[in-house]
Length: 346
Ligand code: AOF
Ligand code: ZN
Image (cartoon, helix red, strand yellow):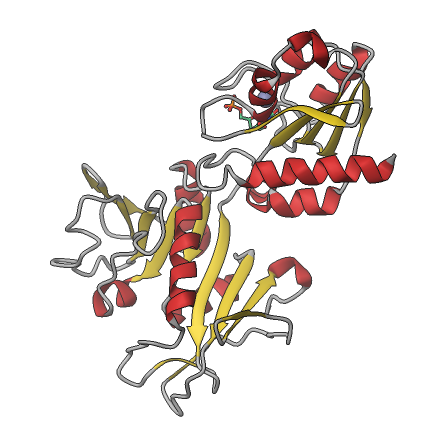
């Protein structure tokens, strides 16, 4: 039985992942409706503010009478509150499934256990914690947001085989290969914000948008405590959104916002960003910014490319313990390190 549950919960994960980049600060959720070991309906949460997974799954069933007595698989506990949409749990109860199988409880305090209680109070059996760890990993962004009340922070950098991140003149082109750079654009499309320090914004003059992939551009976030001039820099002179975090001034002009922080720190930057709906952040350098974040231990994941080049001198890459385990991206080594593996250098 447990094998069957795992099989369908895996299917919910597969469906849920399709929402990445669209659900924003909401969780990734997939739902599969099963009757006599056959899938009769399925769906996932596609877009922030729109229908939840369960409703899309119910909508996909031709004859709604078939849902009676079925097993409904969802990777997350069904919601029990009125948010942008009404409670999914009411719709589930109305269709009288025999059981609901989930991977994780919803950490949102408005739900947390209430969805399960409502199902049980209506005679529907609930089975919890099927592939719990994988479910948590799938919704690592959402769990971090809910439990830590801050954005999920991904650090990304490329370093040479001999451990440098930039040449002596500050340039860093090209350490990683074209395939790795394309992958980075995919990653940009998956997050809400993209962050660099002021030196990188001035020296590299990057666009920080999604070009080599499809999807929405993230909001550019520039760490600029002394409010150095960004005149003529792309991040201020195109029509995409940019937030500048400074200790100098507050101002807003259409898509370019300057936020004045009284106590300037990465912690206060994250607090402000979280208030502004930036629930995930990919940080693309430079080395000063990355070291600053590592020192404060305010990161969740590091994605490090090791390219097949040697600089012999220059700016050293951040000092993070890198294990051997890696993916091969056309010759580049990609190391993904999670902070909860005890890798913080604090
Ligand atoms: C579910 N199924 O597919 C999702 C859930 O503002 P709303 O109405 O979209 O509600 C968002 C909250 O609902 C979110 O914080 C989380 O607690 C839950 N998300 N629940 O039953 C879903 N996306
Ligand atoms: Zn819901």
